[in-house]
Length: 90
Image (cartoon, rainbow, N blue to C red; front, side, top):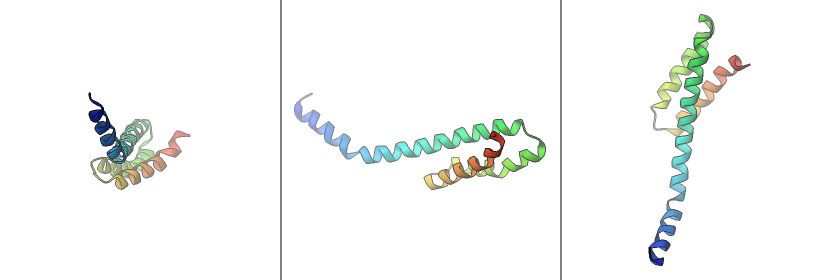
């Protein structure tokens, strides 16, 4: 690579750094939600029928949010599901 090519590559990397960081944050948030969904489903299998019901709505909302393109919806679902499963983790 010539020096000009290297400098262009550096400028391009700097130019797209913010976009890359935003995209990485969205992926991390989506991955967190998927992990919480899996954790909630595992916990739910071990609970009584009454306690399972306490996770149904937050789990349903989380699954719906996982298909959303809105990071805010996904973050909200993460928070809701974390609060719902917290009592069962103690």
